[in-house]
Image (tube, rainbow, N blue to C red):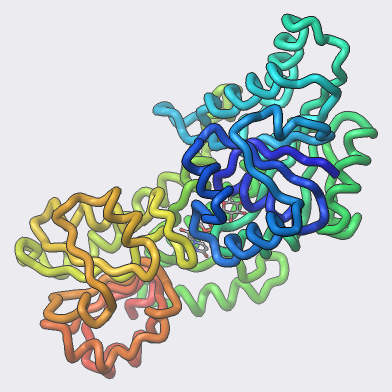
Length: 439
Ligand code: UGA
């Protein structure tokens, strides 16, 4: 198939490349000239394991191209995907400015019938709104004969695992009204997923599915973070509790890891946007708003633990931050718990030194300039009063704490991701604090 993808951000670039990998001819369009120039020059503008190689392979095979001109993308295409950002507006709602600009661009260039597929995460009813908007444009251009349908096809890929998630999805959700559109989407996705994993529904249900899925996953994390707080109060072990719960197949084991809070560009934004969508309908959205509230508190947890431990000593303390990105295998710092911790520490007068295997360049753009960076874990921990593990990078899981402890001024570790064994850490002479396992 000939496919156009508008937006070369995370979702657009990954899905466009994966469509090409399955033999489709894909043109990815973006208004950002610098980004498109990079892509044309063979440079991948985002950090995602395996993506650069896959782009290169498909460009070389003549299946993947990039352009700043929407006309190039629409030329001969049956399907035009919209994969631009929907960041949170000040009131928490999804800001649709980029989506609207994208459809206006499409509507002003379209010369043939086409299906517009929305991959961006958008509030319920957006598909209908976009369809009306494009049809108005076409009418103004005297092109009302053009046949048009707007579909919803939310994306479920995870950063750091994006290629695998995209090529082998658990399911594909398609909100489409017409049989014809469903048939085209089935044909597109059959190389990715069995028929049974392609789920058709109306566009509004598909739009809600995306928010509901992310909020459910976030709810599991917030629930476990609350249980972890309880475990610490009563002397229980949240990991044992998780194992006991997860063995029930109805519950399962995924997304039940307590920690220092969830971050990223999706969960915090989508949970809040779902609250706004419900509230606009006169609903309280009690569950969804509690999920967000618990997480905001959890992101303060490491800082709180340090304040309890150090009190007035916080001023002048050297804290070593292990991990800056919101999770491993990405350099994304959006809503990262490390940011909450670092701001808290600086406000208390502590000195902050940080190390992350991938995210330091990104961190330098976002964090206050007083934050110092270490080139490796050894330098990071040398002479530090304490360490805080904020991102569970494999490198930190493999750390030799006996050796690292000898470099520290004081052997105190706050493990925000429960990656160390509490008994071993204590037997090595560490004062060790973690989340829900402080028995
Ligand atoms: C999330 C969803 O998992 C994807 O399905 C979805 O497509 C994506 O949002 C999106 O809407 O685009 P992502 O934000 O890349 O993906 O990251 P996750 O792997 O889901 O992790 C989110 C946060 O939850 C991280 O901060 C992670 O550390 C935290 N987390 C995850 C926990 O604290 N505990 C867990 O058990 C799992």
